[in-house]
Length: 472
Image 1 (cartoon, rainbow, N blue to C red):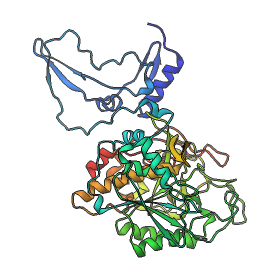
Image 2 (tube, rainbow, N blue to C red; image 1 turned 90 degrees about the vertical axis):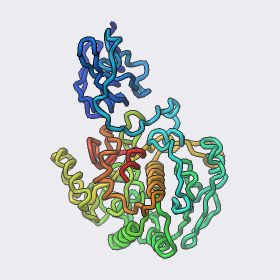
Image 3 (cartoon, helix red, strand yellow; image 1 turned 180 degrees about the horizontal axis):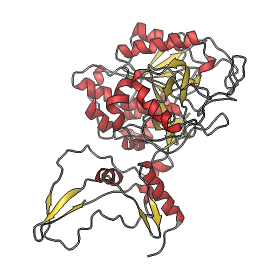
Image 4 (cartoon, rainbow, N blue to C red; image 1 turned 90 degrees about the horizontal axis):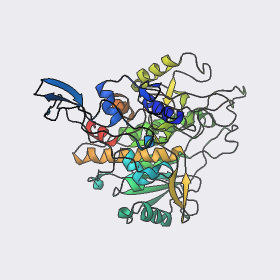
C-alpha cells in the first residue's frame, strides 16, 4: 500500500480530535484507541456481539457504518467494523438491547458551500418533525433600526428553498412607532424550519440611553426596554429571538439591569428568549474601556450577557463543526454567574489556567450558552440570493429548534418551556453536539478556545433536536 498524502492524514486526525480521540499517523494507517461507545459515535453505527456456534467464539462487529462526507476519498478502510472473517455460519446475539435515538441523515454535499434550510434541518435533526400544536404557540423575530421583514423576499426564499412552505406568511406588529416600509430586509432562516408554526415580526423604534465607545461611537443600540415592556403588557410569543448585540459598556448599567429583569419576567411566564452572542469574538472596536481609564479588556456583549436569556454563539463547517472566529463569547462585567452554570464555567476556567488573566471578570455570567451554524447561509434580499454569515443567523436557527421543542412539549399537554438555561446546563448538556475546535480572537489576543463541555466560544455547543426532544 502507498503512504497517504499528508492532507488525508491531517483531515482524519482532526476528525478524531473533534470527538476527543487522539489518533496516531503511522505510515499508511491512522490508529486510535477508542471504547465501543466512542466507535459507535464516530461511525454512526451500533456494535453487537456475534456468536459462532461452530467454535463458540464471539466477536464484536457492526454490519454497517458511515463516515462524514468530508472524508470521502481520504479513507479506504476502517478496521474492526464489518469484516467477520471465515465464519459464514455465525448467528447474531445482541449484547445490548438499549434503544438508540434516530440517527441524523447524511449532510448533502452541496451544503459545504451554500447552507439552505434543508442543510440545517438535516444537521440538527429536525427534518422528520412536523409541528402539531401550532394553535398553542408562535415564534417571533424583531427588527430595530428600520429593518423589516420583507414579504416578497420571504416568498421567493421559500419558493426556492422550501416550496412546501411557500404559503407561509407572518404578522407585523408595530411597537413604539416602528415602521414597515419593506426597504431594509431582515433575514431569518427560522421561518423555513418552524413551518407551519405561526410567525410574528415586531418592528420597534426608540432611542435608548447610550455611552459611546470605539465600536459604537453613535447611538445604534436597541430600544429593548420599550420592546419587552410591550410584550409583557400585550402578550408574548413562546419563542422569541433577538439577533442584535452591543458592547455591554455602551449601555448604562441601570438600564441593562432593568432590561435583564424584564427578560426574567418573560421567562417566568413561559417565553424562551434566544439572543445572538455578537460577531466580534471577545470584543469589538479597540477593546478599550469607555469609563475614562481606557484599559484594554475583553468587551462582553448585551443582551447576551444577561443570565435570563439563552445566548447563541456560532460555528463554521460541517462534520466536524468548528467554532466560528467571530463567535461572540466571554464574561459579563454587569451580571454575576448564576448557579445553573457555575460548575460548567469553573471546569472550563480550571483547564485554562492563567490564559487571558486580567482581561475578563471570571465571576461574571459566562456566555454563550449554546451555538449553531452561522456561515454561508443562502438568503433572498431584494429578489436576489445572497450569502450571509453572522450570529443573528445562528440565533434564529437555535430558536427554531426551541420552537419545535416547545411544540412537542405543548402537544403532550405540558406548559411552554420558558427560561431554558437551567434545563440546558443540567438535563440537556450531554445531548448537544460538542464543538472542540476553534477560537474567537480579538482585542489583540487569540481569545478563548473551544473545548469539551462548556466554553465561552460555543457554549454547551450545538443542538440535536431528536435527543433533546426525548428529554423535554
